[in-house]
Amino acid sequence: MDYAEAREVLDRLPRLEVKPGLSRTERLLDALDRPERSFPSIHVAGTNGKGSVVAMLDAVLRAAGLRVGRFTSPELIDFRDRIAIDGAWLPEDEWADGIARMAAAWADSEDPPTQFEAIAALAFDSFARQAVDIAVVEVGLGGRFDATNVVRPIVSVLCNVALDHTAVLGDSIERIAWEKAGIAKAGVPFVLGDLPPEAENVVRAECRTAGAVLVPASDLSVDLVERDWSTARYRIDREGLPAEIELGLLGEYQRENLRLVLRAIELLRDGGIEVPDRAVVEGLRVARWPGRFEVVRRDPNVVLEGAHNAAGAERLATDVEAFVADRSRRHLLLGVLADKDAAGIGRTLSRAFDRATFCASGSPRALPADRLNDVVTGLFAHSAWYHSVVEALDRIVPDLADGETLFVAGSLTVVAEARRWLEEAR
Image (cartoon, rainbow, N blue to C red):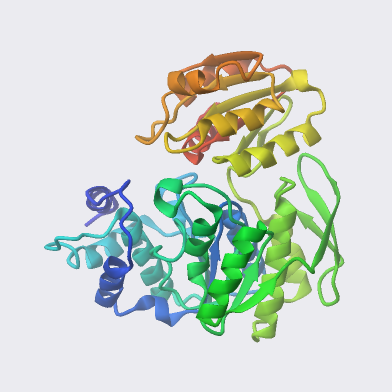
C-alpha cells in the first residue's frame, strides 16, 4: 500500500459522522498492541486555544531535548500535519504502512471506526514505534468520548469552555463542561483555565469524582508588555520561571494560553521532567501555529484567524481594534461551517468591521456564501459574497492598499484554503 492508497482507505471511513464511545478506538489499539501505553502524554482539551497550547508545549519540550510526538486536528496545511514527531510531519510511507497494519482490524466490522479514530490510532502507533519521550495530544471533539481519551496523561489541560458543537456536545455550558472534563484521570494534575462559574463548578465536581488533582492556572501572573506584527512580549511574575517571555503567537488570547502552558511546565518539572528556563524561552520564541492570528503578508497586511465560533469572534474583534486603529483600513473575509452560529459570529465581528466579504470553503460542511450573506445581511455597512475562497481572494487582495489589513476568518477550512492561495500567489 502506498500513501495514495492509504488515503483512499481512510476516505472510505465515516468522515463527518460523530460516533459516541471509545469501543472502536479500543479495538484498533488492541490490534496494535496498545501503543498509547508506551509513552507519557499531555492531554489538552478546550473549546478554543488547545491547538496553540499544544504548539507551545511541543516547541518547549523539543527545545529541552525531548523527542516529542504531536497530535492535532483538523489539518491546517496538509492532511499529514495532524501527526508530527520532533516537528516533522509523519512521512507518507509511514502513513501507508500504519494504515495497512490497521485496515484488517475493521475490514469485516459492522461498526468501522471513523476516519478521526483511525488517524488517532495511527498517531499513537507511530509515537510508540518512533519511541517518543512524550506526546502532546489535542482532543478532537469534547473529551469524554473522544478517540484521544485513551492516552495515559501525566498532565491534563482544559483551556476553556464555550458554546460550540452544540448538536453533539449539548446546548448548555454545563453539559459541554461535563464532556470536556471527561479527560480527568485519577491522580493526574488537571490544569484549569479561565472558565465561566457554571462550567468551573461542573469541572471541579468531575475532577473530584475522577480523583484528578485540580490545578487552577489563575494564580500565575502573565502580563502583556508590548506586541507588534511579529512578536509579543510578556512579563512573568513567578519564582522559578523566566521573568520575560517573547512569544511568536500574537493574539491577545494567547496570554491565557501562555499561562496554561507555564503552569503545565511547572507540573512537568515537579514530575521529574527537566525543562530548563532556556528551553522555555527558546521554545516559546519560535512557537508557531498556522491560522491563529497568523500574519502571512505585510504592507498590505493579510492575517489568518480561525475564529470559528462566537467566543473566537469576540477575541478576534478585540485584536482587530488593537492592531488596526483606523476602522476604514480593516476588511473582513468570512466563511463558516453550516453548524456554527453564523449570526452570532457576524454580530460580534460587525463591531470591528464596516467592510465584509463572505465566501465558502470546499468543505461539504460549509455554509454557502449566499446563505451566509442572508444570515448577516444589514450587519455590515459594505458587503459582498463569492462562492469560493479563491474567487474572493482574487477580487480582494489585488485591490488592498498599503496600510490596509485583510482578516481572513471563520472556519479553519477557509483559513487553510486562503493560506494555500496566498503561498501560491507569492
